[in-house]
Amino acid sequence: MDHFGYRQDRYFAEDIALEAIAAEVGTPCYVYSRATLENHYQAFDEPFGDYPHRICYAVKANANLGVLSVLKRLGAGFDIVSGGELERVLAVGGDPGKIVFSGVGKSVVEIRQALLRGIRCLNLESAAELERVADVARELGVNAPIAFRINPDVDPKTHPYIATGLRESKFGVPSSDARRLYGLAQDTAGISVTGIACHIGSQLTQLAPFCDALERVLDLVEVLAAEGIELTHLDLGGGIGIRYRDETPPAPGEYTKAMLDILQRRACNLPVTLEPGRAIAGNAGVLLTRVEYVKPGPTRDFVIVDAAMNDLLRPALYQAWHEVVEVSRGAGQVVECDIVGPVCETGDFIARNRCLATAAGDLLAVRSAGAYGFVMSSNYNSRPRPAEVMVDGGRYHVVRPRESIEQLFNDEQILPN
Image (tube, rainbow, N blue to C red; front, side, top):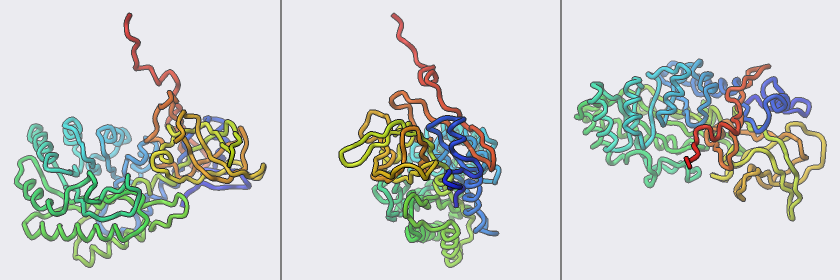
């Protein structure tokens, strides 16, 4: 459920008309709904009931401090993939003991930073990374809490760029090598083996891949227990998809029930960590943009808007589909069109083959833009990044102002004569 929709032909975020935000803040602009973020978090948290668990929001989906602070206040932990994300979480008062550090390429600086902060767990992805973490931990005189991310070779049936659980993926360690690595970690000074992790991909719309992956991870948990390696938590990652168009992903409650049923059948009572990102933030945000021109084309019109691929990269990168709606509807003739931006690339499009009634000066809202939207934005073509706004009932807050042209080159230097 999200809190965006029409009221008498005007599009609202909670109790605020988007046209009011555009008039005050300008466009392009990301608009987030606090109520939607809260509902989506609770949809993962509540179905667990009394079963020990932690919901660690995947910061990479949307790292704005306003978003992180909403989730922190709900009790969320955080899944991070960089030192920068760690500092963002700490900046909103996030508990280091609720932070999991994932990713294949952690630097020495990032590992030291994480251990000094006292994070809950480092999810490791290779023997080389184990050695590096152990070296840093011994240098600091601490024990590093670690889990290995297992690659179960399960097809998540999603876009190949976001499939992470296949054998050919760069992520994780093969199940066949996990016993050796856990044995090595158990005997390594500076290392404290705490858990096991698995994440097979993003935007998954079926339960079967999750269930298959969990069964394979639990097989390994049993093998490790037989060898005297007792784990203290089970990290199942994230990956549940959202509805962009006509997808029918499982509801968080369905997913949770399926996981708990397997755990009960396998007599496993390890505490569970989930790391949803897109499923919490994706449909909690829209990209608000204004039409600059309508340019007739040979087969359909081009609706040229002030948002571009530097603001929302997903359509160009993944050929992703986003619903686009008129902020004020009911006037004008519906035409078939492509919605494109001003960046000097043919790949600069927001949506293709749409039917809209719109004219120059009108506002459009690109739905399902709360995840992998602003975080993937850039200054390509020397374009300032857009503002970000959080709606909270009948009021809103600018949680990141629009960049200025001057900010783009404040840190650059002209060569001396």
